[in-house]
Length: 66
Image (cartoon, rainbow, N blue to C red; front, side, top):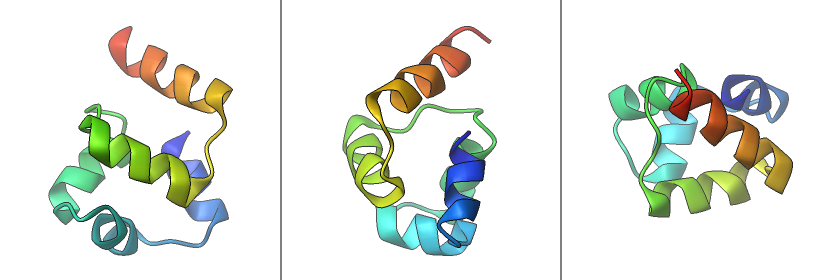
């Protein structure tokens, strides 16, 4: 879901990593939904991708339930 939202906004992984002030490797793991981001990174990601509460909940549930 994060990857799709990023693509809708026309951001590359590199751009997102820069916007979130994290490494490209770390962002790639978030994009693949392999890791939950730190709270501060999640807050910024919500702003940048304009995620709704429902989308955030879905994203977190998907990762936690793996």
